[in-house]
Image 1: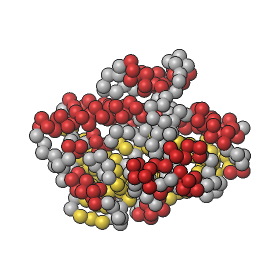
Image 2 (image 1 turned 180 degrees about the horizontal axis):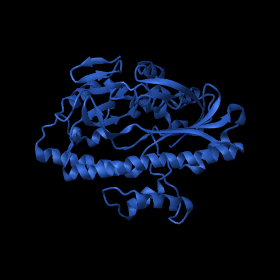
Image 3 (image 1 turned 90 degrees about the vertical axis):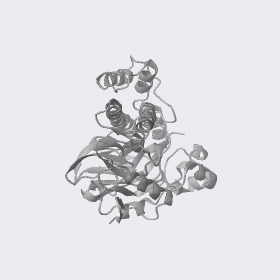
Image 4 (image 1 turned 180 degrees about the vertical axis):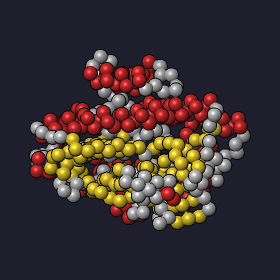
Length: 390
């Protein structure tokens, strides 16, 4: 159950003071149409706390949505079982690396007339952002469709409690989402200054519904959210092709795809609100969701309990407890290697992945304990293979 204070309900425990200060500043905004909900994995973010659910009336805060618009998780249950997988998964890791480019700025090296390029180009023709894409951004958007990115984004092959094989991944709207978000965050600050909004934090600048700036942001936001979802679908298809080709058989049984950085208009407590989930998933009654830990811990497939106090939301993952800088100074490649024992992963790049060390993240078991009134756990997935960008 949450801890409650004025305009704030908190499912997290041991939250760092600055995260609480951020949440209180957000809750004091005049556009907030209720309480701010802090999820069990909450931690300091840009402007608004990561792991927060913010209800606003007639306005949206671009920095609250964040720069990786539509970032989220996707997973597929297959008909394969553990015994179908060979002992050595290193060739599969290589196949995945060939199929799904990963890393900062990485894209497919394909032309507009290749099958993948044609597919991405066709999607872009049907789905246009409000902001006009020049040739460079058009190419970036096309070439990065079906790519992972870096940071905490990952691909995994996992086993559930019945030893069934799952394909799992985490990614978002890549470079185009970031560029659009940065542009609108800057525009919101200009608008806030012009309107003299007297914000406690400039990163909480908001855009008012009915204004040209709001309409421009909404158009780009919906585009980037759709791009992120399609990006995950494209990677899932490539991942399954690599997995089934490697094993020599396989069929998809079920698929889940959910955002955890986005906004949507919903009705709560008798009001129509913009619900921004910044590091939180939708958890309506019986709605499927995915809550990952770190690269060395488990992922949970869940169903929502429709908790109204959280605006039918839940945690989106383990949440960081160390900054990347602190992790690189504090943790070691050798301890990461020990933490990843039993998994096939990019062990030869351990020194470049130290900031993704499991110890840099909160305890996913504790996050799930604190989420008990938000979601019900349906499956627990243990990764046997992990692939990340470096």
